[in-house]
Image (cartoon, rainbow, N blue to C red; front, side, top):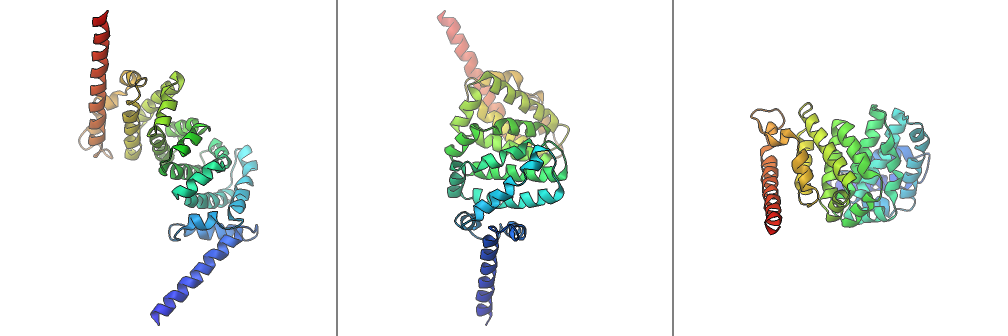
Length: 297
């Protein structure tokens, strides 16, 4: 009897889910459907696939996103609008978390619909929720660890937005932006994009230095971890290493974050030790190379 009841409950729940997905096509039932699905997105297996392959579901969600543009243009967003748009973006995040669908989202340039929302400047709770939702989708796409995703993002305005929010955003925005930056630099195409232009190199290295200083005032170990990893990765680019050695923040040189009982940074030692070791080796290689050139002359 219990097994039959369980099967019946699963069938009823499945019918409710399919009903909500169908309601995404309807303007009248869309809000409730988005909220219900968004709330359960961690519990519904293969929700991303169900949404992507359901007729009209993606189109309905895109209509929801486009409808918010007038408020984006006026740089003002109400809490009701924020709740609605975050529910829609949350469902796109469910799709972005699936590697196969992530590529399809990139190829149809879906992310271009979300980029305008990163231009919102008010530091209100409503705007911050939207900002975090968009960054969540971007990080979900980058988690797929596919070169095509990184190449696409490098052709958008994402990098300037990431660096701006890394320096001036909220604590959670900084965490997501630091993660996104590290993921982009992790690919050779991302490292080359940054390292082959002096303006980009200087902008990035100076931004990272300012962020490191901020971390002495506002504790955020997750940001420090990804910032240190970004420096570690940048050191692999021959045109970046000299700039890093010249502009490396003193807090990373003098072991500030490794001090005993420094709140929040108890586990920073290992990451910082790896960075120090790598920079020391790179510096020694540079010195040896210069001496070799001089001896030839």
